[in-house]
Image (tube, rainbow, N blue to C red; front, side, top):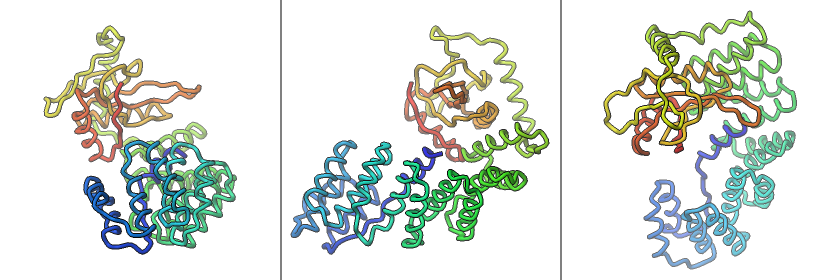
Length: 384
């Protein structure tokens, strides 16, 4: 859960607040938001800063243009040391804090964020709350997240702050307070609210409080919003766990398979039992896919024996229930894209990983990644 929250919050862009600057310096942020990095570099080379605010501005954007994380950290630290009280030094502390959170150097992130005194950077309270949560200081996480909501009620992290508060309550075994927090979020009626994730977290809070009827109702609402998303598979995991606890729980709404899906699943079972030939490395041969290639042979085993050892692949999911991995493979194959899954054991925990591929090159993988994304199936490219 912590990883998935991190992956979601670090995709949100930073809203800058400026000291008094000439227009050509203020324009740097617009160029950055538009992704025009070459133009920023050219602009910086031509600008002639007249005061410390403009010098700090140049230093800030120079840091953002660095190619490696170590270079970015070094450049931000130089800015903080050179202009410690400047607005851009506070922005640098905020950016460094995010980097350190991503690298799990939470103590360093927390120390930097606490040094931000800018009245325009209320979002620092959200990031401080996230640090507190990582450090298992749940009461302080709630306090900082609530401070953020009071000071920036329409900020970029309002939804995430509510989830953070709810998760902190759940960690303290306060399911009722978590449900109240999620209800407040629902009542805000945010235009970009992730309803499916909200129902998923509500379902879990109901589950923890032993309100299983309400839990299943919330899970079902979330599941039926999009049956092929990663959140839907997380919901399925929770429902299977509930089913294991009580056989009387009805989860039949999870199985609206078409005849075509059933036929494909049956064909794959037959193919798997026929023991297809292996390559010398023990892998089952799977066609390499290039852009614009003919439809591939999908009559291959759903499950392979081990993780692949070569080629470009798309990882489309990792599940604690094997049935979910199997189902996702079927859904991907219905798109005429090859998919398999394998069993993985790490630190004593067994999971099942869904892969699509292999692909002849990264470009081919990107094309299929886009096709999966169009069907709300998230994935990332990996090379073995």
